[in-house]
Length: 304
Ligand code: GLN
Image 1 (cartoon, rainbow, N blue to C red):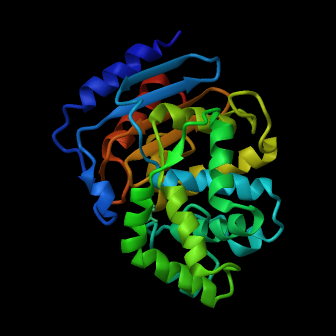
Image 2 (cartoon, protein in one colour):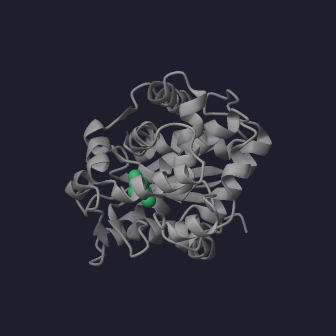
């Protein structure tokens, strides 16, 4: 039997001494305050066991990891227009590129790049009565944790500097692919990205995708087929123009965020979360990618 505790702690101990740790995101000023030496790993096994190393219980800004959660809620609403308004193809482009959006008539390549997540945010703004409150409640429910909250400073920091996202939202609006006001949709989007969670909380939340749509309390939130589709989108689009590399090196569906978090999962087996704020050139956590690569190589546990 694999000794996950030793494997995870060895990976953590080896990587934490790496001199090259990547660069902390600074385009959202509040994120630049993160310590590049923070490093946590948390594993939630489906048999109930958990394993952790380092800063696994320190809250951080989940940023784009939230796009999977908003997508899952939009899918759960069974909005028939979802897949006519956003595609499911890898973009081969950075998370915030706008060029394809114009070429492709305002239909974002997938829901995990910014433009796609903004369309998903628009759907949630239409479907929810109180979008920010109701979305937070959804996340708390699938996490089985009522303490999860937004970091309002991070949301405000992103609003003040979110010129690229304002450009994306305005472009979407000009193509008639936003029903609500740009300011309303982006206010929701900046808050969802500003959700603050620990590696442990993220692993417990993403349990729902590893467990065919049932959360850690065994309550169904999405169907088996919806969970399968979300995992497929994470595998093909979860790391922007590094999605191929992540599948090649790690071999698991997953999602990264510019706060330095990565969550990856093997359906019916486990969810594994890492947090290390230093990013590589593609905006993905440098140590996190290495830790996950070492984990699947050493354990031989991947979808392939
Ligand atoms: N909130 C960030 C943005 O929209 C999310 C980007 C990310 O985590 N890749 O730019």
